[in-house]
Length: 565
Image 1 (tube, rainbow, N blue to C red):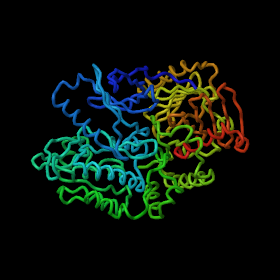
Image 2: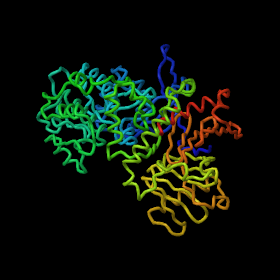
Image 3: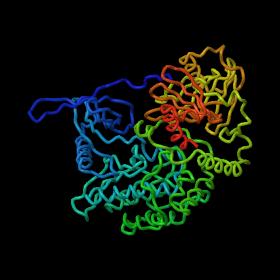
């Protein structure tokens, strides 16, 4: 596959003194941007000497001219550096040069619960229990050291490659001098801020973090924060009066409602404690997994995974998955994530669920969703639920032969094996060139519309222009494009450290690996394999059993595929 460079290589140098007084250097290769804040940017960096990959929070010294800002940074560094817990982002190092301060932290490959919720829309109860147990472990640790976090929110709860939850960003944290002490600074994030922080006369202590935990539980289960409005002042008024409700159209358990209602209490002294939360029926009604499964970064837990943890948990989670009007059956577009463990680890791991079990689980879910949403979808073309009969034999074998990853700005451009060029945009819309005269535009709900290049809505000008640029960049001759209007296009993608996984609307799954090999799994489960030299081979599943290299890649794709169904 062809990939356009996205980031200019930059070396960061750390100068330090060795034991003998000699000056030495540690060097880091700066990689992709992980996030941006008010005063800092976070990058992925790789130690040139040790090859260890870390996250680097870089703060320009020009932003630290005010004494208060500099003091806050010193406090953040001092507090975070003192913490060592399995559910807290590990502080690695801090240094500076003439321009910047660099804070090196443990890299959490799977982003945050904020990105997870955007992809999933809502999280099942068993998963919330899992994340909550880990979060409470981290909070009990920092509270035992008299530290308040004061900015608990989904964006500060990270997920590492082992699917462990990690509490991070101690920019607003403070340490009490004694347990009865109260702070009076107004700080936090509007949707998560506790009412006593808004009333600075009251002062606040550990209970502000517990309030935020209640908001987090509600947000994960319902899909949006309990006090969220379009206006910050209105949100603060609702928080000050503790005005929230549970939507009728979203089903959650009574235990969940009770727990949230007993945490989101105006009087801090009447809120549940962290130990109270752990002993609440919400957390004791079923076994809780140590971590969630990697496929759940994209989709709800499978029935097989749920069955490990009691029928009650399984029933509750399935009710949330299937009865909520806010959930749709389509796959969820993923912008980017780098969550897969090292290649050797994954390749040596055998699938825990058989293909027959996976297909059975998926079929049951799709059939249920079809029955419940048949009326709503008469007007739309939802390609997730199209049957194989809708595609010709030619379409069922279509796959991607060229690809350009430019999701840092726009999305992914690609060419199908019938020479149709398309783009899957970061906003979940798609566009595909059918021939010299026509293109298809597919909106977020997979409703397809056909336009001519000389007659289309003005709001599509930018996307059509990008389609033409991708076509030119990928070297496609307009005279070779397919003359038929095809319903096949790339619908979803997943970026990992080892490969780019693509899901097409004809149910073809393929992975383009970083070593230039490609594996394509067709509708009939036959396999196309392209080696490093670009040579193409076709196999059945039986034929690859004695081909270790191909079998490992096939297993890797199936591991990811469970997250795309």
